[in-house]
Amino acid sequence: MRGITVIGSSFGAVSAVRELRRRDPAIPISVVAPRAELVYQASLIWVPVGLRRGDDLRLPLTPFYDRLGVRFIAGRARGLDAAGRRIHLEDGTSLENDGLIIATGSRFIKTLPGIEHAMTLCEGVEAATAIQRRLQGLQGGTIAIGFAGNPAEPTVVRGGPMFELLLGIETWLRRTHRRDRFRLVLFSPSARPGERLGARAVDGLLDQMRRRGIEAHLGHKLLKFEADAVHTEGGVVPADAILFMPGLTGPAWVQGSGLPLSPGGFVRADAYLRVPGLEQVYVVGDAGSYPGPDWMPKQAHMADRQGKVAAVNLLDALLGRTPTRVARPELMCIIDSLDSGTLVYRSERHGLVLRSAMLHWAKGWFERRYAAALR
Ligand SMILES: Cc1cc2nc3c(=O)[nH]c(=O)nc-3n(C[C@H](O)[C@H](O)[C@H](O)COP(=O)(O)OP(=O)(O)OC[C@H]3O[C@@H](n4cnc5c(N)ncnc54)[C@H](O)[C@@H]3O)c2cc1C
Image (cartoon, rainbow, N blue to C red):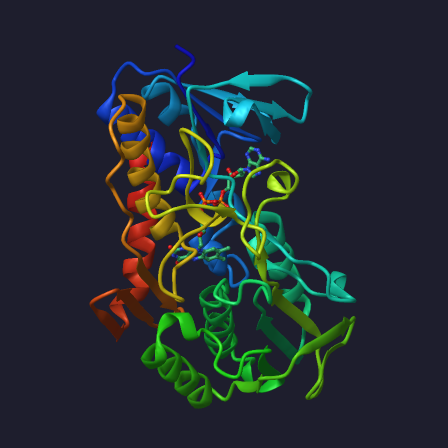
């Protein structure tokens, strides 16, 4: 038996692997990814303000894979053939499988002219560390923080971390007695950024910004960046540092792979996370485009839920049973501001927005709990 291959080694993959092994102690499982580590991205927001060191967020996965008897293959997928049964890697080798779970995340659309002048926290540990150095070198001026979506798939926007970065930097400047030397500006082409979090959450965040003296330049299409300015159809925001999260699109390797793609470039999935037209091929996490509400989260929390569901459905399919599990959409995050936090929860039936200073500590506790489970 060739077993199951998971491509990717982050939230969606880890959850799928854990569930596969829990349900089947014997099935061969292989994971293909560049590194056997997971970057705990939710805490990247704390690197620029010195609350975490970048390397603290790299969680080694070798002990986890060894404990679960998983074969880790260091490499990068570059394509598929044999209807998903064979994966081609960038080094020219290939791998065969009986079942496949794609969990390779998303990437940024970096087409805006002058994008090299913007720093993107979400690119990982190096980017977060570079932002920290940049902020610490500034004696004063304007910090412009923004995000955009994917025009071909407007529901795919990740604004939460940029709100956290903005609020966290504001708190950090106050705590270090430098707030009066800085102007903070949020920019976005959306007039109500973060709408996927729900109307109450957006109202609360915009209200927090007003009370903290953070300016907003919203609802104007972005035109270009220069080293010292953000240009939009609604005017120019002069900036000494530009921190920007571009829109998301699907992973590069799936383009031209023959996998069915959504308008925004993500791998299409049905409600059971199967890739239409291919047997025993599933997609989870940020890499996929799923049926669901227009606030369908692209979050670690959702990737985790989808990983479990894909594992169960794939094992059922390999036994000749019809997959029945569905990953119900659930948005859950804590939007941190260093001095407090806002819990945002959204499901098809319920919604909750809750603000408390305790939630800042709860966010750190979630990180420690997640890391401990991988040791
Ligand atoms: C700053 C920040 C803050 C966030 N905060 C939160 C939060 O508070 N709560 C929350 O739930 N979510 C949060 N998120 C979102 C969350 O981190 C992502 O939704 C989550 O990481 C998606 O997981 P994934 O497994 O789908 O993909 P990723 O985490 O993107 O991982 C992709 C994996 O695939 C591998 N890979 C990529 N290409 C290839 C290839 N060609 N071949 C093989 N392997 C490949 C990568 O190396 C990696 O292992 C945040 C994200 C950021 C950036």
